[in-house]
Length: 273
Image 1: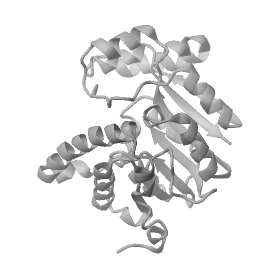
Image 2: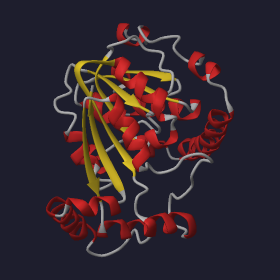
Image 3: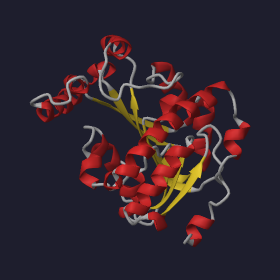
Image 4: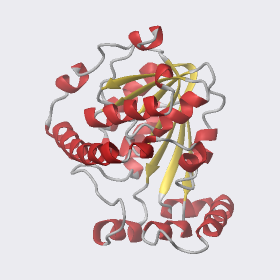
């Protein structure tokens, strides 16, 4: 049964996608719908995999727990799960008593995220919307916090940042985790090596310096924290021994020598308008 909170977002489904139905968005939708279909078949046979362990999610990449902590206290806050994908973050946020709105461009992902919320008993705290990040179907100043993981690098950043600023409440902020494209060796590896989860859509690309300049033009305060230096070896060698130790070394190294951040794998961005 829909809650009053969820009914407030009913009907905000396809308008933004239809208005932006251009080649890039169509390609993004097709790529992710194919992945969503494969995942749907998997969950039909393994519904237990819809369950979310908070610690497992927060530690599935070395930067996620750190980035989540930057959101601060979310209980009672309106939080936008921006490009919600499979919906794990939405579940964790709802368990922390946030009022969550989760949107994604891919309808299959929205359906999976909703199924996951139901399986984890938090569906009453999450409203689901299918939308494009460049044209959000939400009123101005709707959200106290915005969370996004590996989504900005799929978007046209100029309109996406305009929309982010518009929907954030005064005093609110956004936290994003995004792949960084400044390391030439890593760029070569992304283009030539095969590793788990490498699949990419046609137009996505890691953030570059020019993308960060766009972000800085739109937000009053931009904090950027590089993530993973030696630890990125775990991407091509998932079972690498000593991986957690490398992540600890990375944190100390990048804090002491911030210039090495341009060779990192990921960035955590905290944005205030």
